[in-house]
Length: 325
Image (cartoon, rainbow, N blue to C red; front, top):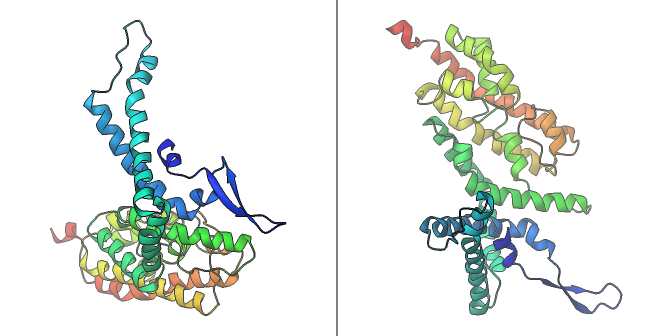
């Protein structure tokens, strides 16, 4: 936190409401640094300051050794005093050098050259669909794709959501379709791969008792968008039959949700509802009470059911490994 604040300017130039003149206000911290614009700088500062601090502490060259009579907690605070101070100085020196060398702050540079292009890609439909596809491919191989790629997509999607939230609070038009709640509502609802439709398809058409037993256990989890019982229980991981619809479905539902939002049937999301909210309720909360969003989200589950059904019917012709043995 101290390293981050050391990069922030402590004066802000504003326009006076009465005279219209520009006035510099000192000893303040602009909300720009704590808004979406400061998100990337905050994350990068957290990563690099932690790396520097750990290396300095592990070197044991900057420790202040206190007598044995000093309590351990006090001795420890002295031991890390120089690593902490040096870390803050290094980070702030980088920010100062950047500003002197390039005539712009680190915040402006990262916003213009990293955050803005990445946000533009990930909040566009092609880039977002590619992201979702890569996520479910990782899931297919047993890797938590949503968490693995989170460091890539979350800053951009959160920044877009923050702009939506600010526009909604100001009574302005909502700028972005694809944001963090868009992903929760249309790409991972009932779990990665939109497996709610798979549960319905299994309960209606599957003749395999093992699939039906696992699907019954997965229903309560699926309601709250958790699908590990299906992913690792059926399993979907490394399963060529169920893996195909698992990778296709969230891309299709994302495209459908985008289209419905684009034509105005579904409202753009302005509330970052918790990802564990059940389908329908989540869309209602995230859209600030839009019924079209609820209908669109439920239709995504219907689409999921339609896509999964043929593959569930194909799986009826396969036998569990225990029966084959």
